[in-house]
Length: 113
Image (tube, rainbow, N blue to C red; front, side, top):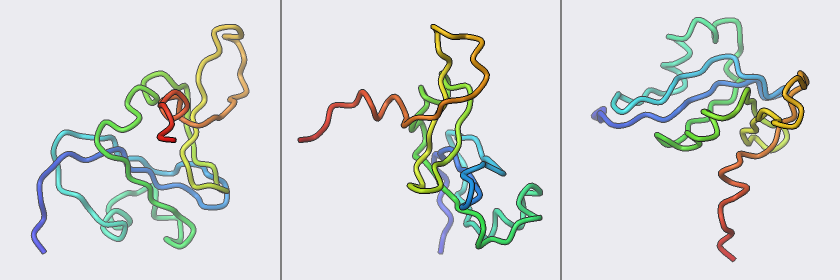
């Protein structure tokens, strides 16, 4: 199989039980996509984990760019496998406990019904 150079989206490796992210690849305009097995051989952060404990999620290049730019943190919901973001609260800027929610871009996107 030939490897193709193309845009690479954000890639996250997260613990299935908790949703906590243990390794992350930033999106980039060009690169060669790798497999989970190849990434486990490369990423030092993944060495302590059994691959069965870790979920890999890759987004399209630019997907959720505004959410990543605006959010203070993100993680994965272990029940749904979906990414959730914590955004700053302009009414309570000192609030330290993150409140996670679906990406705002998904919340404001018109439904296709």
